[in-house]
Amino acid sequence: MHFDVCVIGAGPSGIAAAMRAVDFGKRVLVVEKNKVGGAGVFNGALASKTLWELSENYKTVQSNKYGYYVFDSDLDYKTVIGEMHKAENEKHSQIMEQIQAFEREELIHFVTGWAKLKTAHQVEVTRPDGFVEVFDVDNVVMAVGSRPRKLSSLPIDEKIVVTSDGIGSFSDFPKSIVILGAGVIGCEFATIFSNFGKTKVFLIDKADRILPFEDEDIASMVSHNLEEQGVTVHKNSSLKKMEIIDGKVEYTLEYTDGREEIHTVEKALISIGRVSNVENLGLEEVGMKLDDRGFAIDDDTQTSLPNIYAVGDFTADIALVNIAEMEGRYAVERMYNRIDAPMSYDNISTIMFLNPEVAGVGKNETQCRKEGIPYKMALMDYRFVNRAIAKRRCQGFFKLLVTDDDEMRILGMRTVGDQASSTIESVALLIAMKKGVRELANIIYPHPAITEGLQECARMLLGKSIVKPQVFNRHLKCYRFTKEGRVEDLFVNGIEVQH
Image (cartoon, rainbow, N blue to C red; front, side, top):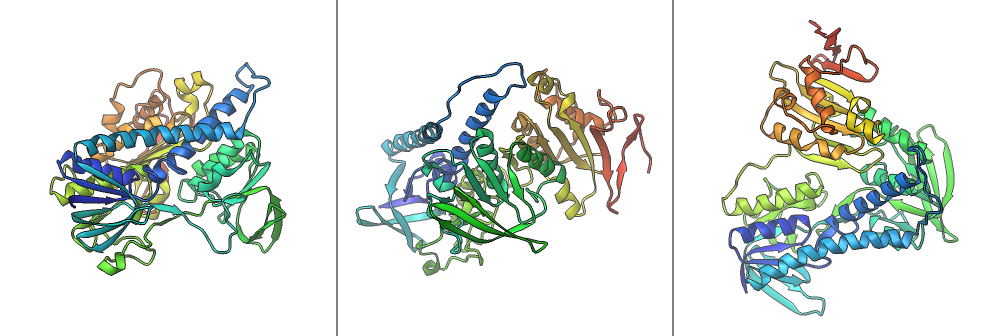
């Protein structure tokens, strides 16, 4: 059988690529060895975010600081995990319904099995029953995805010591858990378990603070909240040894000051990144170039073999669902010379499901200073935002970065706080359009809305905010970072400072 496009892998990038090919009327072969939806649905993004939402709801119900309290509430781990599986299955069913609809139109041919490149234009698929079939294809999209990274020194059995794939294997909330890895995923699971309040959480962090890629004020707020909820952060520590002893986890930490500590917990979660699924794909046989980490070497998705494209976690770009989908669509547009717009990573929007929620787009202060980019910055505290006041959730802030010139083009934004994810779309669009804060300042946002705080940041940079930084200088900031590395206040008594 012959197909215009073969998509290997039916995760977010693969499905996006297949549907874009359908838009062009192409016949598409889709091969998936596991579950349609991939890590974007199962044991990954959708699964963990569902758990986070449930944990946030439970935390709110249990709180007594809003004038009401819920007595005698039950919390059952299997039921919680059951809701997570319901969410996964709902999305999986939606994707399968769409695939089956295009199968009836003979635009998609879906095969469950293991794909291997025989040549650049031939794909061999081995089905679960052992039947082998070879397909002729014009183009290939490698959307092979990734899996949690493991180390041979760690006794990962996905029951006692687990990766994110094994979270659903617990029969109940563990009384204690240690999480190795203080990046986004590790901190998200620390937030989830601490929100439910049934588990003592330990977080191993080799650095002096969590989230080292983010600005210190963001990491500090998240870290403080985790510790307020009972999480112990082992800062400046490295894991020397981990063993399963009598059904429990014993781990030894070595600190930068030379100290060693031994702890015992019920469970361990290993969150040290992900590795691409590159094994047994025939990549070396067909001559595809990979880097030393096993990622495809690509030029805007096109690999060293011109008819084969790499997308999603198979590239060394940012491993996010929205990026994977962008790359999947773009790869198909490129192979048929129907590109609507060049692919750009400058306005990538991200959400970290922590306590509080963190959302961002573009550059942060850490990146700008590392790259030597001068900028102006305005910070607006949530306590001045009416919607946050009404919700009784005033912990958080907006931070807006712009170029240090009269144009003041937007470089990036970070929001930390309730509904943070609702604030990034307009900024992402303005970054893509290379626009400045004047457009943002003049948008008429609804009232009351969290986004009004973002607008006040723009107004602060223009010297016309309603809430004045010279009055509330403990909670509002407005300064420039110069190319010489100096930090200078922008306004004193409402007047722009001339430096």
